[in-house]
Image 1: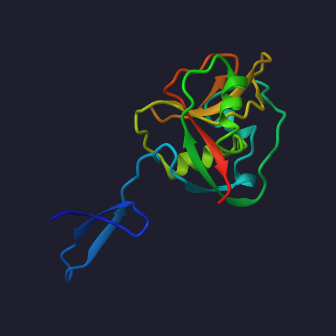
Image 2: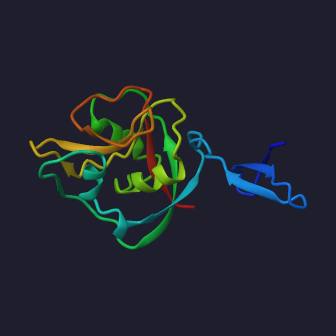
Length: 171
């Protein structure tokens, strides 16, 4: 028989007896995205997730550029998801996010994808760092679309109200 339990970190754990003296096998079941406003931690190895490698891993080719800050070394920081409603452009997003926390480097998308590998299907997750430049010159920001993949969104588009944004928080 299979049993579903919660471990000490709030993750669901699947327990299955193996038949050898009652031993149990534990497998971590992927947790869903944090709720809007809930503080969570991410750990990123910036040296293993360089900015210009991100578009290539997402399937893009060409001569991308990156003109922003870079996370180096292994770091752990606290974040939360914020919903700011419809925004005409990225400047309006950033203005609304300013009261909630700092805009983190887009490399943190990679740590978010590791920690939360299954989409909740409730809309895209955005990182308001438009430091990536597409080969044809347009600024892009890393995101996790509703389906849970990885992508770069054009910073010139409007953002619908279903977007959630990651901000860094200090505790």
